[in-house]
Length: 136
Image 1 (cartoon, rainbow, N blue to C red):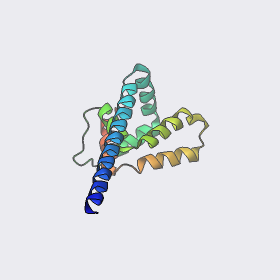
Image 2 (cartoon, rainbow, N blue to C red):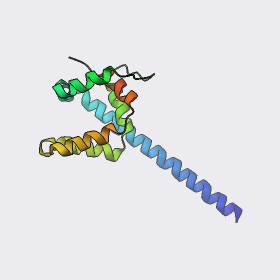
Image 3 (spheres, one colour):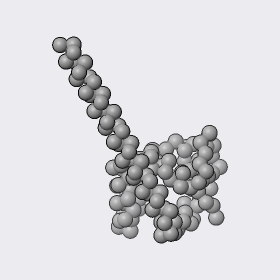
Image 4 (tube, rainbow, N blue to C red):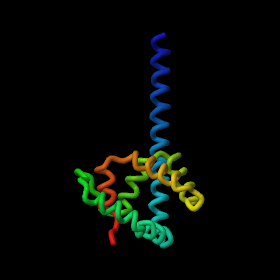
């Protein structure tokens, strides 16, 4: 009886580890694809267009003044990759879908999406990400 329980526990551990590894790999691949897209000329243009929005610049300026603790990014790509790793695959796909349909979203929906995303990060993480983004 003990050997059956031990066997079941081992199988569950292996399955859990395999699931964890698969999630980690899929998340890494999704993150790499987003960063690769941001490195294309059109991706860079769209990203910088978003960053040039006065509201975004205001929020980034405010965050840059915050304490980022020991967290530091050497590039905006590194900061984006870090942010992507904080989100699940489902959340990343939903954000991509929302972005594609951004013109049909109400202001309330946009605020809700923003709050959901920001809730995934500590103030220090947001400050470090903001410091990695280009300023005007």
